[in-house]
Image (tube, rainbow, N blue to C red; front, side, top):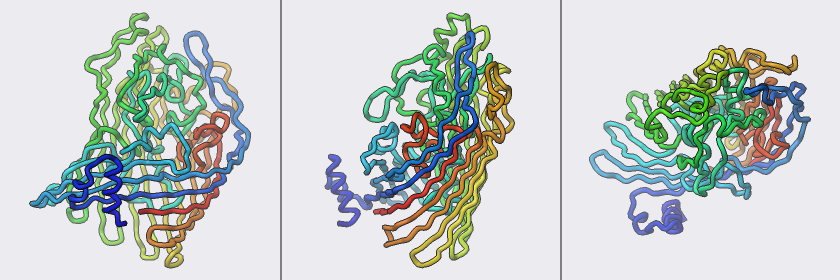
Length: 518
């Protein structure tokens, strides 16, 4: 059965009129299965991990021991997916196109992200119009223009680097909303739970600080999960039907409510500009119950904005690209207005990222280079809570064909950690903090990753591979905490029951896998 007939069969199973699909000019079914058996080794960490307690009206950081070393054997499928895509020629150089892509779990493993990516259309899905003369416009939920630059420099198909250090992890979902006490999970309609200040926002001294013991991967570590201020922090509560929120600090994003314009190819150049519509913007400024009780003024109107840009060029064996992206309000929170904290957080803080990359196909293989700088604005309204910082990441990777069927690939990526940090990330907080506290800025938040793999093609659509990966984390870094490719769906966080990675843990992974695409 060819792909078009398979698409008709799938459409019928989904309740769509099969005759309409059969009459379409081009509708095809596609997908990918990538199953692995792997062993991951997690080191022990001698440094102490920050947790929290209450001192007066403020939460302060304490130190607790880290976990011991651990070895896990796991079976895991890497981003398995299937989809339908199609086009229709409308005449005059104009065509319509669509794609609906969904994730799945062939190993039967349930996870909290199922409602995001495993739901129907949970991955890159869109509809649009394309003109030979003026380019294309697409709307839906799909990867941003900035994220596309990773495809320019990436030269590794197994144990790649695009979603770990580069981009400050990847994420799927809407922009974060401080007014959601809880969010609706996928199509189930279940509430994800109360919004908290946990790892994303811990109160330090008299200010509120974005403190995750990572390279900036806010919300990916459970180290500060004990800080649960909930409604006391001014969350306006209620279930939000906007869907699941993405990681507030990620720049490799698959974004909901997204629209993008792509230029036609001109002398090898293609440009993209996209924005996510702010469906959750407030109609007026908000005053929380806690602010009223403490005589605080209304908070600034929450008005999120998201713009993404890319310019890419291909000429012969060379390709290059540059991307730029801005976020406004992604780290916004409602917070208590007390005598010590003032109005707390800036609900419309601004973050921006710049990236460049290139790749050279030298015949027997490819070499790719990527670089980016991410700047996170100050999301505090108090001097003591200043929490802006900057991260610079880079990657080099490549592949070499050793035979008609065999390819060796390798890559190395690195971040020196947070730099140009605000005072809340550089000041040692009140007692009792041990001298061994690795800190929340500088080399303690650094990380690097090395990957090596061998792919052996069995056919055009099937293959076997083996891979090795190693992540080295600074004392307060947990790079790779949400990336299953290198450490499996469950790592050493929460007693080994979640994908969260304890700060300061190094991870070594060996795996063998089989791939099939259709």
